[in-house]
Length: 260
Ligand code: BEZ
View 1 (cartoon, protein in one colour):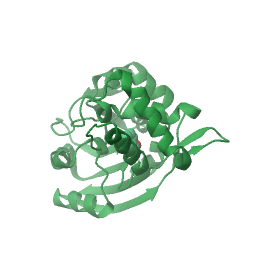
View 2 (cartoon, helix red, strand yellow):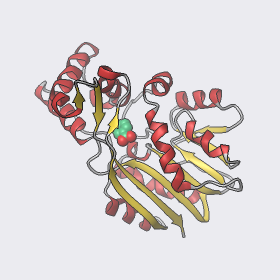
View 3 (tube, protein in one colour):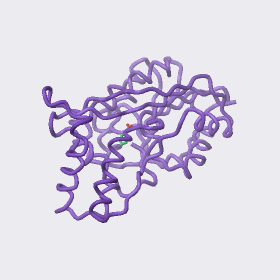
């Protein structure tokens, strides 16, 4: 997970693997758009604990994972000792040998609007001319209900918070890619309601895993109450009482672009 600017999100690699495995599972759909081959050198940007890096390597490609979170890189190295993982910042990363493809799943939305330009420059520099950039991130409207309920709950308690995530539209991101020397071959925004793991604790776990920076000014004692307040606000729309599952209102932006 690349977390450059969103504040001190500390990643718990165990929790990530145990309770949020859907992140990598859904990422395999995006891999179909990458179509890696055995001849490819592929950079997995925001590789987290390395599940998708390993999937890329399975076809025989040379896969390198990069993530800004040392905890994730450590876990990825333990789980896949035969692969190369690098702790680096997406905005400043640089590599000696060019890649045929850069892949990224569920990571780019952690990079702020202001930092996207530096990231796209670094991705471009990492690719050979003709190399492809294939990614999936949260698109416009992603987790909107969760964000709105959380901000409303925080505001009702006197806290001033804002969303730490960047969820662009197709037009916005395609324009950005073109401005940074890419030709966009495919781009699509789609709804993907996502069932969270751990039953009735699903939303709480999700907020605890990903929402650190939203709660940075809330005391540890009050956090639980805030999260309960968010659950109350969202129960009618996102919780299925019969199945005892939470479904997050994910919307994905998926694209394939080629370096000119
Ligand atoms: C996402 O994958 O869409 C996402 C994950 C964590 C926080 C926000 C969005």
